[in-house]
Length: 566
Image 1 (cartoon, one colour):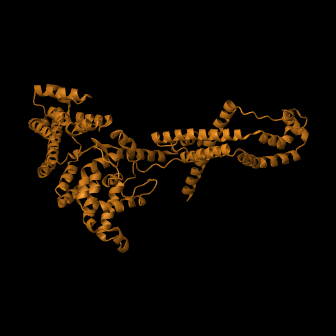
Image 2: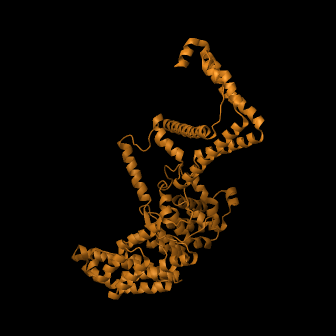
Image 3: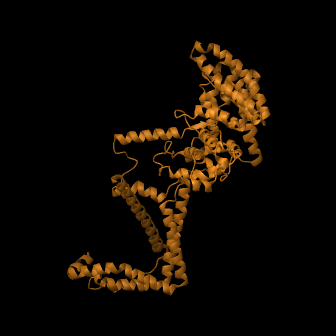
């Protein structure tokens, strides 16, 4: 209770600081505009300043004279100027919120004014325990926002480039392609490449930014020797069809197997040979996986499944390629749901990192058992059965892991080509999953209807504002920034949780509308609004007049006279 009351007090104090800052800013600009632009003449009797009696005795008369000198034009200028300034602040606040996700006035108030009023600076931990907690939370945030290679990434030449030729848009961002270049240098190069001319050329090719320079370097390497990585580059970037890419990957497989067998025999002769064998293993696994993906894209799904299973048996420790996600998608295409369940039983483990593919595939299998007969009306009358409850819980689990996926599966948001890298629990992963698995959800009768009826119920179980999760870790706050780097600019990034409009945007919009309405009414009905304005100002200054009268009645006039002269 004490923590709740303290939090409420801090929020109230912050609100007061923000409101005071905004009103002070608005009043400052308003007065500056009136004094230096409008130069409204306020003609007050000069005799008041030279009279023998103190100025304080003429407060009431001076106020009355001040109000009488204000014409309707002044009120129009006052309300119009206030509306204009509020509108400019509103536009700036909206632009700042859209770009940075926060209110400018709120940020300035919290950073500079809140500490002056005794607020606690959230960025300064109070003791070593909080320091350790911040460190742990930062580590968790970094691990949650790690970028992963997309297991189902498309071919640049045969798919991404063809999209560019047709639409004129670039589906890949520079950040995404730069990450791919780093992956290629990690997987396909080693310290001994300088000993072989072809590998030395490819080592430089993977660092080239220009695609044509990379392709030219690959052809140059092939003129020297049968280089597996050169064939990989040509299959990925130069081939314009999947058939051509498959042909190049088969040539790469022959060269890669020769290098792998040679390095396998020498791997225990030293650290350099071990690094070379590790590189050759990565090359061989990559080639076989891409060949399996070519078979899947060309309709030879059973052949692709066999290749993936053999690859997982031959190299069980290379989980970084996430080949099981390729296998799950191919098995769903074959509608081999029992085999899909067997794969999930192995990889949907608490000790292994989750993914949208695993969570949503598990939800799809449980939804498949009840979706064909599911009816929201019947369920509301009789309640959910055990199987239906299991299906709903699986959907809630999947939505909590990645809340962006349902809008793509339900076609509430348009799909784009998936990036080469994804952020788990982010919009990029949702696009990559829905791009390949939407057809599998459509194939199961009633699955999308069950998803549509139940997915939003997930958010009622997740604590807000996401300080802790329900089934998983709290949703990371860094996904939006990373997804904007991974996804092209023409795509509207899905954001969770939705950022509420700051208080100052709503407050400024209301103030701008109110003052604009006052300016319009004053312009249309000057006399009536003048009466209202004078009555409002008289009422506003009435307490001040009352206080001054009491002070004048208590203190002697000579003292007031001396004070006013000073």
